[in-house]
Length: 374
Image (tube, rainbow, N blue to C red; front, side, top):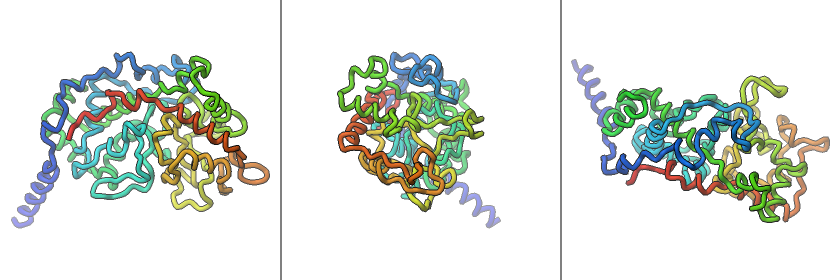
């Protein structure tokens, strides 16, 4: 009897804990203001990415995932993305570590999870996920749904290891049943639907309206001479940045099933950050080569956030690559690690070009903003 009583107390205590930090309805923007169209807007839509062949900026990009996005699904995903109820202590949301004004990256070197725990890697940008097949710095998952839920379940980040607990919390939040009804024609809340809605919102995070994108349509007429020099260096044989940051998304080739000499290209490389890796990444110091879209606002850089500025990143590639035994072939020469030998004006030009990759519309789009007010 005593054991049964203790178990009952434990269950009640757990339930009270899950609900104790519940936000009130007054903490949420009027739900009537949420239906900002995701697919029927004149702004870049999901179809701009989904129909890759119709978008010259993404034509030829290998891979890509086809996630069906609806307005109602993306709206629900947006609320979930910014809701701290998705963490075990109701303090951390997906948006806590993926800030819109920072290109949905984290401006901190490492992110703070629930209970003050600190992650071991910098939170990278999650823009344009539908043109990728592998996610996270070590390319460990291949589904956008896993990209959505891994941080929620992570024991450092959000700590919601038992998804049934999350379902219970959302069921006890009045407005979620209506949002799930709109998105899935049923009030029933399940982990699969949570993952689907988050994936739909993330697939709506489309950035294709930077000055570079505009310049690709008008022959760089909107570029300064310095920016044109940076563009030519980036895609030319001296800096060769474009050999890794290729395609319209300016990210590394990333697709399963081969097509190169490797059976599975996962968009990673060893770029010579150090000779001895305390974090081996995918393996042997290989880390995801991220998209450079909005790169000027996503500092700090690299998997461990070691570089605070673009100038530091360029200095690494110019003269700081370590000759690791698994260094990517692009950074090797018969004499050792490759050096770019850039002049000061060339370094400045590269930074000027990288600044043209900022998509101001994306960084300020109401569709992607936090619907909660505290």
